[in-house]
Image (cartoon, rainbow, N blue to C red; front, side, top):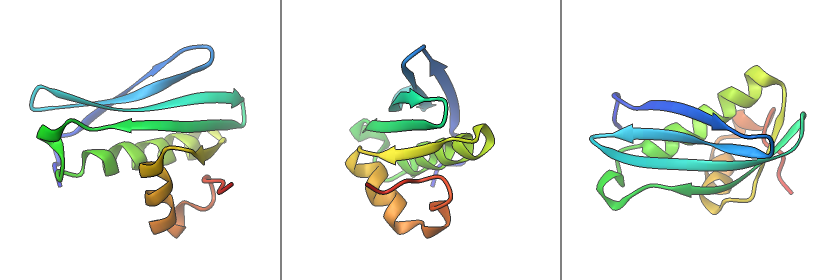
Length: 98
């Protein structure tokens, strides 16, 4: 796993994305805001150059930590986020399986 992952959040009125830049490559996890208490994670994109380095996992964990801090729930529509949430039962406090 890469320890030098910096994740930033870009937010709009209707959603946004978490962005990780590692070794000059950008990975993202996008989300839509349903209401102040609920977001839908709808896409995770990690370029081939970063695969296997834990970048997607870092984005998922960041989204979970952000939800906990902000007091909202996540619906994981993105297949990657859904798979991660099923592996991490400790995320059940903020991940809403549909």
